[in-house]
Image (cartoon, rainbow, N blue to C red; front, top):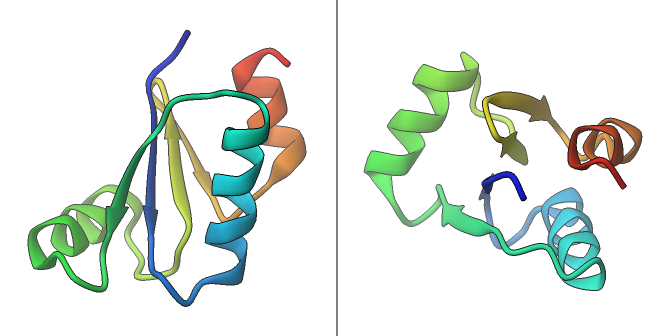
Length: 77
């Protein structure tokens, strides 16, 4: 199983959708709240070139936004 990381904010609807999807599929993930963590916010901007969330890392692949078909493909579901 690949490592899954999500950069999110508490008020982001698509972030909640992504996390609900991971929970439903029993996929472990690390969640970074970029609204509360300035270091992770900086890391998000450096990795993605933007401030928008969610940004999901699956292994070494990046998905901007909750692109469910892309997430499913990258996870091999």
